Length: 306
Image (cartoon, rainbow, N blue to C red; front, side):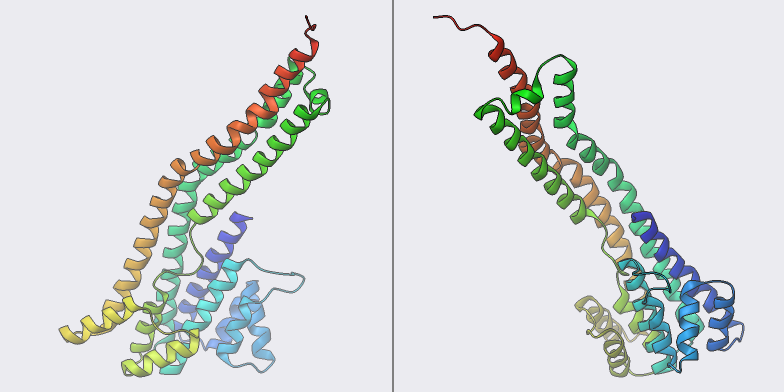
């Protein structure tokens, strides 16, 4: 599932890059989408269908985020990627920015964001795999007791203590899995392109419009205003008297670099944090499901002496 979602995001970047090359070669947008659709690109097929239905260019590009025929859904990563692409297309066409150059820059940002997410995924693979392996430890203990000849399974239902061990161990296993999964999910990279608002504003300003007009175009395309970091870049551009486009693109690149570093730091901290569910839940479950039943089994076979 994870790999499929990551492939979806990479496919979106490839489609946008090929589209930018066609546009730069002088092919009209509608015809460029048609060429991509004829090559079998599923997103381009949906866009061309929308064009044939009378949709505007921006509306047609937004159709790429919808499920393909015979599919019930798409990954959240793919939907988010195509929504970002549709927003960039809308901004570029609204302000008259060079569409091919804008899409090339967005494709580069998509690839950069995906590479950062891949690096985080690789860093998370070892601690997440260790957590999944340790989650099986209590069940291995049950099998070990049976292999050694103890009536472990029978002990669970032989009295109140056995039932308490079974219930307590089961609850701890579920808690350990939920806790570990929650820690891993929080350490994963988020969806979307870090620094997207800066990239979109750079596209808007590359059309030669004012900052206020570019801001309005970005907000209309995304539904949200630019973030405080983007405002700080614009303030720096104004005070230094330099064009804001390159500063904004540098800010977007820096945001993706920070996301990559923060993701690796989260992965490094995850190895330590996973010790908490191991010590609080997994090891006690091992004792309740593995050690305690063996002790109860031995005690039940010992003769009582008065």
